Length: 414
Image 1 (spheres, helix red, strand yellow):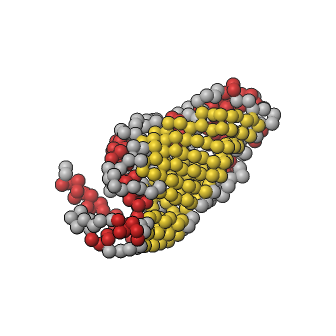
Image 2 (tube, helix red, strand yellow; image 1 turned 135 degrees about the vertical axis):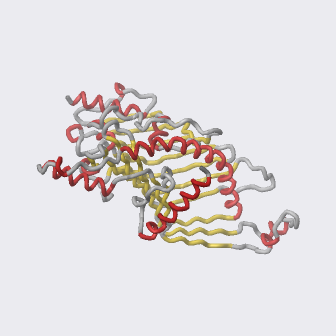
């Protein structure tokens, strides 16, 4: 029996790699420990797992060393621990939006069929990564992202670390769905970008750098119990205090980066909108009315099931959303030209604006406290927003006005 469970789990883990098969994974059935080296990760599976936008392509992903610890006798409560040393990833922009990694809602790395024991074990995996390096290439610029000391753990609905995996899931028998809670945190994040092409030959950009301290991402995933398909995701990006200093040339470089990506991102957004209709339709079909009181039973199991359904209704994810929360954000903008450089600059009154030359060594500071951004990419226009984060009476009063404007807009173009 132990060997059967082992083969099923290792079969799932091998899907995330390219040069590895279940028979090559040597993990002791008694100790539950194993070590692997020089793994090539499956780019298609990773793009699907990370839900990368279609204007990005993951071209390479390798890991130098992996250690796995599995408690074979306690798989229901204790997660599989995966330790990775160094992970190197290469990404590039696409000239045209690529085809989605998986057009169906069912992830290709799932076991297939109904949500079962193997899926619960795989969803409960905890990970520890020493460092991740992402090299990003584009026609206009190149960038690198370095993240150190990454931890991925299962959590309870209150975002406490789950000591028992059964407490990291909330199931609803009415909708035949469940919600999984995961938290990703890291110690340091370093981003560096530099332009490699510019139409303005007289202008040289300065590398753009951003260093962030500890941060975390909280992920809530809603899945179907019938086919393991992913119905909706809620992602919360929590940042501590952040200080970012930008010089004049770095600000121009950032604008150049954004301009170079604008066209491909717009094409990718149009593609996403075409696929969003099917996702919204499936999400709405999952909202089943609760059973009538006449059909309900009062047994202890039914009472516990009813309590779980109530908790699920409180935590339910109606649609996919992305959220950003920061503590304090300090942005410093300053001039990086010296007095000698200013003398070399010749002012052309026909092309240059006069006010740009009247300030010497100018600087500006922008401070934002508790910045909050909420994005709902698949929300139908004019639909209800009661499930939105921080929904209040002011938004409710505005909803009637929005519906009136939307109705008049559709009538004008119908």
